[in-house]
Length: 629
Image 1 (cartoon, rainbow, N blue to C red):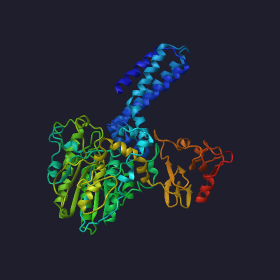
Image 2: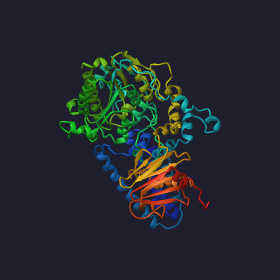
Image 3: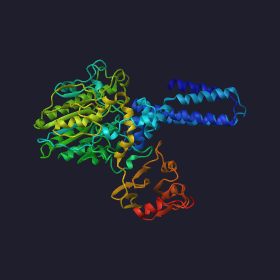
Image 4: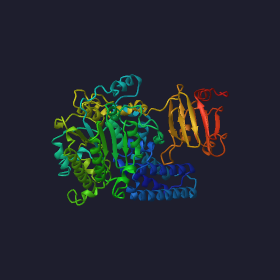
């Protein structure tokens, strides 16, 4: 489709060059061509990272922001993107110049040209990707029903499974009598597919050896909302896919991360565990740090905290620590925690196999896969060695008899230099458990990352259910088995219910705007400014943030314009921005508007220092009727 749409673009521009058309057609040519370039370029850029074009991970990172990403790894991509932008500007200039010099006479060539360009835009995979993403994110009926082969009418909707029937609220039913310590390793993009001897003969050696004395799950399939690092963590610990309830603004403004969900960390904390997370990357990226601090972790350490502790702090990648450094620090922490009285959970996230090329640790110098021509496979071979060595180090310690080790993929590998080989057959996530009381052998039962937490807990002697997940050692059918190829459709259909786990606040007493610290407190919860807050009659809120001005991020004005004319809201922003929407806001500093969209009687005020707005103020000002109708 990409090749065909590009060919149609060339044909359309060729006709356009020879056509004499009216101004309307010339303007349409220009707009369609630039739109085509945007959607196609965005598709190629997204596909470079995901291997799946424009998917839910793209939406998440647009919403949450890209702070902490390893941009240094993508210098060449940035250069190519810059060249493309220059080309697009030149093409826009050419089109406008052509439009200015053409005569206003219609011609068949002009009609052919615009037909070819519109066809190119419609069949572009970028157009399809953005359209599908829009439907998925808004949870319009057509998308999940099309995947479910169900027409979107009320009689059929009534037959659909209800979320609360399948979601099990996590409750700790039984604590372990002799709790085991837990070491939980997320291996970046290290999917079980790499174990396939037909596609990757001899690639996995150390972990294959460990697998023989482990319980290993062979049929863990990725589901919607679990296909990138933080999403895989949420799915495997909370039993839900990761969906956000906002569109095009930065969710990083939230003070908590899925605070309404009860996850593995919360359950372990209730069982008396001390919890620590070690990851070599920036904790701010995608909200990893906030996820762990929200869900019971006592220590959360990332690049900023760990790098200064290294003997050679400059030994790092664009993303953060090499894995040999991470494992060295992690074992010191494992030894320290093992000597303490309380049981602990030590969670790790590796980096060396990060797409697209990987970056093997210095400890793997001279190690390569076959002729060494495929960089990501060299990184996988290194990771196989380092993870295997770390696990054996734990098991050779004096604390082995009291330690359970779990190894999982955070997600299937994104596009990398082995992508064509990975796609040649079925792809599965890695899930391996080893330690005291673990019966070794393959478990071939179908499952998904949603099932990891409820399957893991019984190995620790803990009884609890977790969200949409099921214990793969039990008799219950996992959700992915029950819904089969309709699973992803059901996940997206349930996205409004899942989105509520973000736990937007309900105003009980006051809102306090602090112009000095540039923050706003909704009762006892603090958020950054600027902010746009929607209210419902019970003073439940939906929050919109504008953390940066990155492409694809809606401004708060964009959100405001999307409200219906009776939406109650509070908007706090710089006065120069607010004044473009309401001329009563003026001057420098912060201004606030409280009222209903498009109503004349809005409360507009400059924030000199601090302002306190009570529940009574909100009800009086945001829910009042407009005297002019």
